[in-house]
Length: 196
Image 1 (cartoon, rainbow, N blue to C red):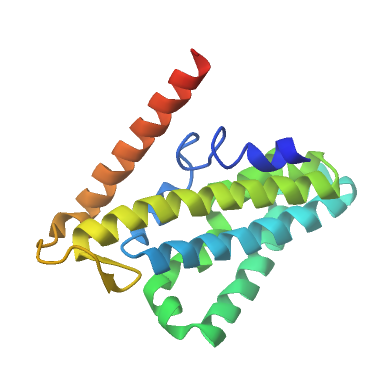
Image 2 (image 1 turned 90 degrees about the vertical axis):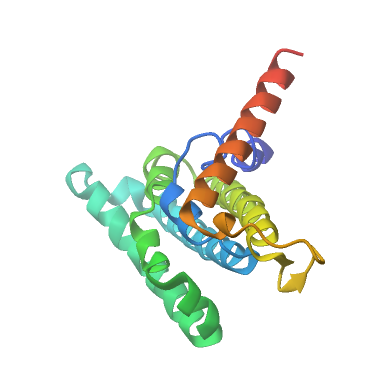
């Protein structure tokens, strides 16, 4: 169980290692609040869909497997979308279309197809939790860099003092540059650890 959980955090991190889910990663990470909100929404969808798919996979005909998975995923996306609208309208406004687009997030469908459809309930939950936390960690790292350097704030608190923010970091080029450096650092550290 622990192996299934921890692989998604660093070793097989969906964003930093597999380069999946880059569209929401780059688009919503202008603030830490947005990044964490998107990560939590994705964790909810991953856990719910992996749980249901692991229980039903043996009963779904292979010809309708993918459409069935998408319906299950869409159900959990609808639930999380309505919850965010009801309890955090400000976050809903910030994330906009990216919450409904979790339905087509390759991380969610990929875990359903590659893992939940082939494994039992508890390992599927642990896989979903690990991958979701890995995704959220990547969003947190990227949004922290972008908010601090681009706005001069962290969770709304001013942290740079009199140093002016570097506005490019809240724009798309800043997202690409920051993510590139994070991926390079993770790759370097992983290679260094493998080689001793």
